[in-house]
Image 1 (tube, one colour):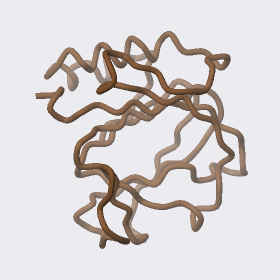
Image 2: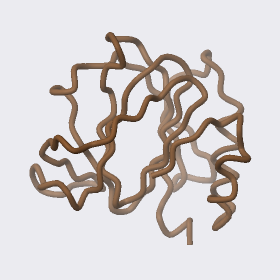
Image 3: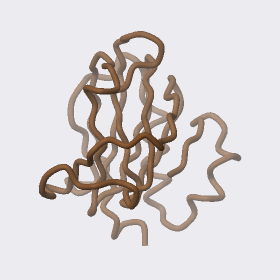
Image 4: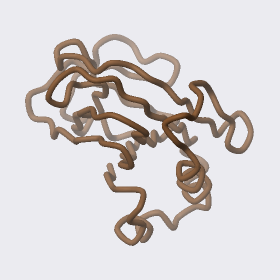
Length: 155
């Protein structure tokens, strides 16, 4: 898992040199504004895509841990605040069968809360379980983007 601020590449760029796909994704994030329309965007064909979404954050108990086997998530906040809880998936027990590149997990108490605010992003690898949509302070409307990177693109 990596958490950083988009405007400070000196803090994250040394970690993301393994593949040009990182530059494609992070350069695209720099083009987004709070007025960016909701929807799905192809960054380099249908296998590298992003979803601009909006929702109101919820109580922690209403949110679920998830992880992915075939994709890496970049979750970037365009406007608003949310907490994303992080924990290694090895510490969790599956909550149902694996399906369509997502595994849900039973909740755990030993997670790390990550504050997502405008301009911040987190990268979640297949070993990272994450629980998005959690209230940060009070329920708030958040606009964010989730980029799905096929793991084979990272090398």
